[in-house]
Image (cartoon, rainbow over all chains, first blue to last red; front, side, top):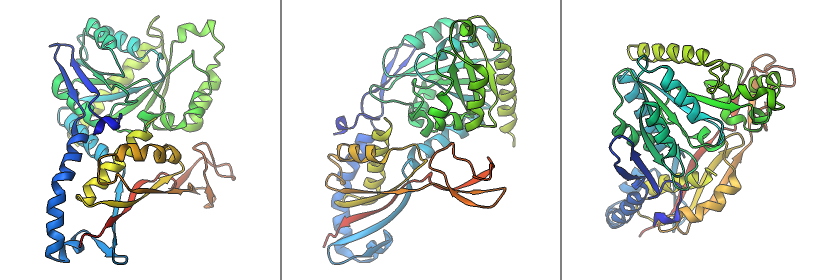
Length: 288
Length: 112
């Protein structure tokens, strides 16, 4: 019945690029529905037994046919709970986890390839690749030398904490590793779904308009760092860096802003220094 | 786009609380700055609820206007956008309301 519901139904698949194994994930929603039906008989029974059960549910009577249950639950409580579990899992293993977010085509995968190649031997990097379809990016990451799991979300527009949890169980990152989670290219939906990361890194290419931060303020406000990418293209595009920086600062005064080009290597050293500092902080955080 | 996921999450919360009883009404709170479009949630809800205890339920959405208190001048002011700042010019303020994304209550059929 969850074929009705394209979001996290049975359309999400995961490919382990190391073993070639494909798994379908996201069946929890369907099983929830099944449970509902199982509960039906039970609940009927309880209600016949006593009013104490109604009290247990914090219900109060509103006429003869209706009762109201005060739920007072966060809509995203389930995702937030799973994200908290992921965060504790990372902390216990002294792992730095980052959630990389951008519009499609901002150069996230190219940035990752450069990072993996340049930091080979220094930082063990594992990658979770999120895309609606294909394993193209996962294969690029493998070719660059890092272990990768590709999550295909089907119609889904973002990764969620459960997908990351499932990907981690296939990826098995080592103690002290860095896990880079490349979210589905989208500046809207990933802002709402905590994955358990230490920080969100928003990639903002100079091929976009300078006003992206004020047009999509939620994601820029949530950023722990903003990377202005593809700066090797600056001579060829009408992109005013000062304007872009001012727009970022308008929604997020705290996040560091770096200017990088994975293609020319310019500015990448700043990104690596930030990664090293975050990794050290993540390792230290395991003991505090 | 994520409103479909939000609608599915609402249905999950409702199903967990309804415990198999049929749901007449679901009341949710959506803050102005929550990043979620109320109309879009309303559009997707019936689709997400198909085949569940909430299949026949009416969705009531309470939209919560965003409000902040300035840390410089102490004024409370509406913040219809994430870019709104206090009229005194301060960027430093505490958001009081407008980021809600909650299931408030559900109305169930009485099983007698």
